[in-house]
Image (cartoon, rainbow, N blue to C red; front, top):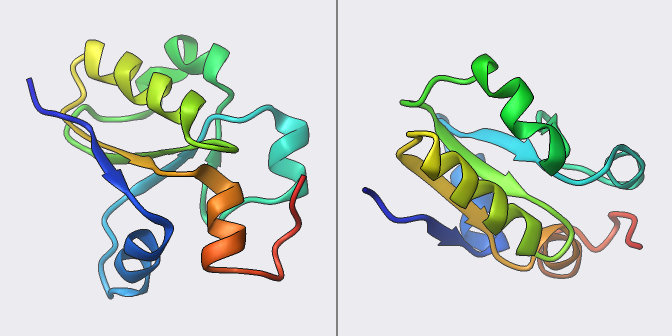
Length: 109
């Protein structure tokens, strides 16, 4: 079983800025949180709905899980790992860290 790779906000930015980021950005926060701020191109799928909607993803896809501070996203990545997904990433510090380290103009809550 592969391990979950933690990415810092700056590491993620570098990857997103590359010509082929090759990541599914899976935001596992609640809808109201996603409405406040999110990464462009991210998919909103609250943590409690992952098991019901997992068929929209391929186990071979690289998936980066995102939440507010990095805790729920870690749980999401662990759940996906248990369902056979192998290329999993977690955004360390979540959207709050992204806003402070990469995009200071992003709304915070």
